[in-house]
Image (cartoon, chains in turn green, purple, red, yellow):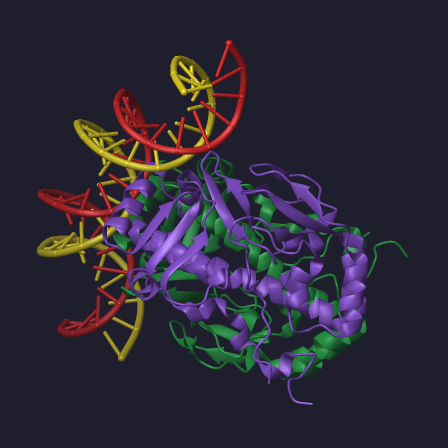
Length: 267
Length: 267
DNA sequence: CGAATATTTGAGGCCTATCAAAGTGAGTGG
DNA sequence: CCACTCACTTTGATAGGCCTCAAATATTCG
């Protein structure tokens, strides 16, 4: 009994934001739906990893997208702009995530994908991905799972954007990041935090100025400290409490019914 | 050349919120990924339609969900609550939509599904849906497409919640509803609008009082009129302009690359 | 070291929430 | 047919959270 396989990446080199830049470090690969044959087929289909600098647009709104982009190191985001120019980040992508899952089916993207740090990306040509989806049920199911998880995260973000105060939104985002990075422990956690305050604002629907004030307030409350591109969480339990954060929602492996797995636990 | 098949339902009886309560009126069925054999298999797997009254919870947060719920008539929503009790609607479901797509893979839901009007729902047992997904690539692809579309809509909602004024949010929501209901024309459109002002607030992250003021303002601007459970859009072009609404985003069929279809247009 | 980019701080104002109450309309029962 | 109730809409007054504009300080980078 090996326990539950991870859908989210669990490890993250703290200094370099580097993990093995390989399709084997993606959520697609790590999902527990894949057989060995499917893993092999996936690996054959992926292109070699490509390196991007920080703060670079990788795909722009209305671009044609012929590849799925699998983030294997670094932080990336997806955003769209309101008519007045306001920017809204709609997804934060860490190693293991697919930046443009919808490009599996849609030929144009309706958002911009941008690196937040230097990042490594593996491309999966859409034509090959589609062929794999038709041939291998496990791969099809893994894609579906990723899409469903995206929706679950989006739902939580909508709850934050619609019903939480600025204070609560920031606390909640920090809890989410700590959880998604797979950190263990609850006291004096330190994780990389490459987001600028303006980018935090773009995620949470706030201005950079107000983000600054709220971060200072959280610091004053002894909950966190952000400095030098790093986040220190003094007391994760207290932060969760302030955020109203339920740590279970991202560990969705727990909820995946055993019956839905291609590779049952019991032989 | 028959044009593009619909993923969204296009017709909607104005008085009764009724369409044929049948799996054939769902987005799953109407997607253009399905072969005849797949359609037949789907139809066999679905349960007979069941009728629900308005304002009833169908699944509650933390419930186990053994069925996928396909809305075939009426309006339904999905919502979650913040710790302080604030409610946030995360999806509006009209005939054709699946209320709990994530139940395909997760055994518990993290939200409540509630009817907004009397509604008819067809259930698809998860075990059968999973079997279909493994056996039929077109069905797998249709599920993936629905999940991806949900994410696309959620992204738009996040943009509204994060970066639009109350005035713009309401205008945008009304545009979305008109589009999703498949209305043609641009002048003096009348569609059913069963949402209470408090529910509009729960969708848009506003209070009912402020929703009321903004609706009155939109009315004063000669853009819309809401009365008697109906919405009248005087000038859809003007409303879209006020909302910064791009009508293309919901008609995602356009973007589905021909190569991704199971049933090509050209023989 | 200098320029550009982020963070921090302050003052003032607008948008939206909150609290409260009156008005409206549908449904019920006498 | 008319009280009566209940739920929703409308209106008003007030308060507060977040934004805007502006400038000083700190940090990064060439």
